[in-house]
Length: 270
Length: 282
Image (cartoon, rainbow over all chains, first blue to last red; front, top):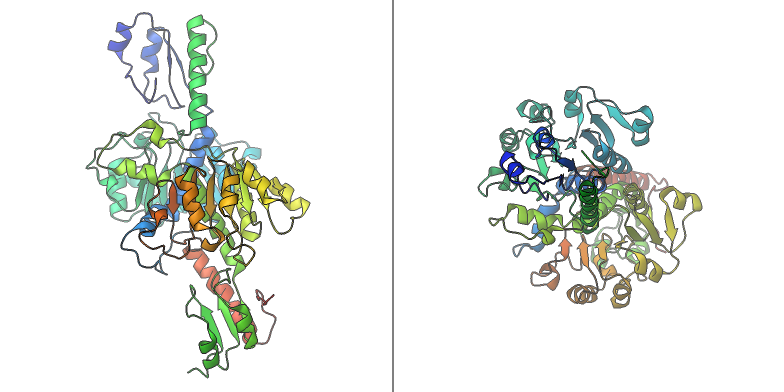
């Protein structure tokens, strides 16, 4: 299964009586009905850890590109109308700023490790608190209430997985708690954010900017307001899109499939 | 008015400091530069008028290091390119067109390990990068160990091994055209050159040729010569080039800190005290 295709539903499962395993690319499994698959005796595997560093790297890339106005800057640098670079054109500093990480799993933690080197102040919100040594290693402070994180952060990075609990985790209320100078970065799933509320918040300058590797749907309809907002960077779900990682993902999927077909324990079984 | 001027705060190379200006300001005591680069100033000429000079080295290092990392990440992950794909009217694209290069675990070669270069090393270490560096002088062992950096006495060795080459030197007669045809050919054909120093450190014509012929994979340039480039310059049209408008220090915080540093320097000079960031003609 690559990028959520084909859609695995009752109809498909009924038509494939000998299906033994569905190997899904990437770590997210929100697109799979695990109960349904289990009821047909079909195993499921993903590629959980290989995507982590690339996704964390992309989170950092989006934060830096957004704060330093890289897309705008590039357009100015190559535009036929540019005669000089204005002296009052400024971005926002990342070093020393406060980063709030929502979801401190493998990916969230790798983001923290990277952000620490930029001397950022790191806050995090998670279902459970991390061990003290893990917190100290990255200088991260736990915010049991997401509100505390939202109110203090200059950058809010979403690194949760999509579950019924995280669906629309960031809505109108959460966006209004954020600083008007804050930037929202989403490397998790489009549905973690209430997209309509996000559009409104960006238009009304309730938050400053957004950088989204994920949306709902993907891709967005071509007339969607998010595509036109100047303070939004959108990338086409490239969290794990590097040659090296894609190769390893393929290898892992094949490993899982081969084990599944041979009746052996399946690596990365979900 | 010209009799009253004792200090100049130079913002972005203006005003131009030449013989004429210096002669018209007899009571000028100090020129404070907004930034760290002094290549736009004739330091010998200024010193000959008995005018002191200062720059703002501390205020610029973090923002410039951040910009270097921003360019490295944007270029490897093709951020600007794929953003345009994501918002374009057509949703048809090839998966292969959006694949980037893995940053974690790659080899970064830093040319120029001063304040800014070192801050880049600190950041790159967190991405588990293998760090090589080339510098006029070797850093202390503890400094090298803190970032896991390996010294390359010969620049060739760095160029041959690096996946990404970040240029962070100051512009001097020795570093002009430091990266030319020879150096570009030593680099891996998949390598990415990132320049956050000065346009003149790179032989721009050689760079264009290298990018066009596949000798070099890609380039990310915050600085060019001149700035901005003429609108018909080949660099503006190459698909594998990211150019940014000299934004290295252009953040609200850095601007504030630069001005603070400049004011400190000016006040010290006017009070006959040692200037914290004095630049001497060497």
